[in-house]
Length: 229
Ligand code: SF4
Image (cartoon, rainbow, N blue to C red; front, side):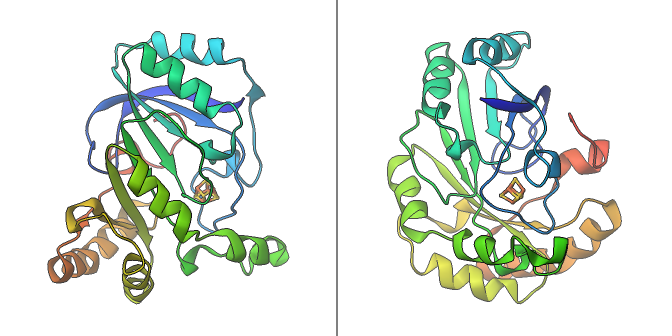
C-alpha cells in the first residue's frame, strides 16, 4: 500500500479530538478537492509502496491505542480491509477517515465520513482538468448510507467555506437515515489561524440554529499547517 507518512500526534478534529493517535496516511485519492490540505497524498501523491507488516510495525513504535487511517483516500486501497483486521487483532481503536465515495467492508470503530460539497470542486485549478471527474464522484449517497448502516459509530464532518454551503448539507442529510444531530460536525475550511477564527464565528451561529456541532481544527491551531502533526 502506498504510504505518504506514519506519525504520532493528537487527533485534531471530530468526536475524538484531543486523543493521542497514530496517523497512517495513505497516498492516492479518487478526488481532487481544490482546498485539499494534503496535496502530497492526492494532487501529487508521494510515498512508497509498503507491506502491511511494515505499517503495523511503524504503528507499534508508539504508545497510542488509537489509530487513524487517513489519506488521500484509504477506501480505494485494495489492502485496506486486511490492514484494519491486522490492527484490530492487536487491540487498536480504528478511525477511518474517508470521503465516503467508495465502500468495502472494513473492521473499524469509528467511520469519519467527510462528504465533499460543491465548494471543493477545482474548476480553476490546473486548468480545471480534474473538475468534471471530481464533480461526478464527490457525493455518493448510497455509499454514505452504507457506512452509516454498517459502522459501530459514525461522524459526518463537513468542510464549510461559505454560509450557503448549509443548503447542500441539509439536502444531503435529508436523503440519509440513521444519524443524529450530534453526529454532524461543521468544520471551517482553511489552514491559517485568521481564516479559521473568522469562519468559526458564523459557523458557530449555524450550529446554534441546527443543533450540529462546531468542529475546530486543533492540530492547525497548535502546530500550524505542517506535515506530520
Ligand atoms: S478527498 Fe481528502 S485527500 Fe482527497 S483531495 Fe479531497 S481533501 Fe484531499
